[in-house]
Length: 323
Ligand code: SF4
Image (cartoon, rainbow, N blue to C red):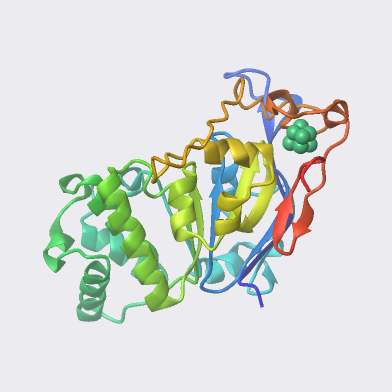
């Protein structure tokens, strides 16, 4: 059975008339628009796309930090979208999220012991103070931090260390799925590698599944078995990570891959520079949402929306011309 099954998920935000007006303009931002995918236990699905493509909203909807407009989120076969507050709370520890800016998600007035201990307390996972402290020390050790860190405050740590603390807090409740929202984007390259290696080690030890969100395909490819590419709230390509890098089918994915620096200077990849920016998700283009920027668009691309088709086993693409 899949750990997570997302079916036709939509997250549409109503647009107000102006910054200070409470009135709805009658329009929506279609941040996530009819997205379906699965994640197996212990697996990693990478999610890439430019900023504003809806990937963070999708991640937040899965852990129920934002309310979906339509669709289902099945976690271990149970529909999270149909649950009331109490039912959801009982399951919440099984899916956690780590953020790009761990500093923003760590209360500056709490010691690290309290930050991690809070998660244990909410879910009643430590029986008494000695057990709580022992568990916190164990979690700090698991993410490569010294037990002495427990009495310090978030501002005393580097970005990489703060991300380790965020991971320890997520790990405290023994989740089965962690949504990793750009967890290394703000870190130096050398620190990025350390955090990715840590996430991979923890996955092996605890059988964790990840939805790993990033704008950098090179990072996502390294950690993911499969990769999903999003554009304007929709999935445009989904396949094994190696397949996406070796033989991308969608012109948008091809452009993203052309921007990855080559490891081998002899194999020169031609950079595909896309014109313009991602259009507004309030007024997405008709037909294929990528058509205003697509280098091979045809007349029908402006009219007909391409469905997500399985071109090869496990390789899905939403493009009329992909074959
Ligand atoms: Fe380009 Fe048309 Fe394919 Fe869209 S459907 S990606 S516009 S070729």
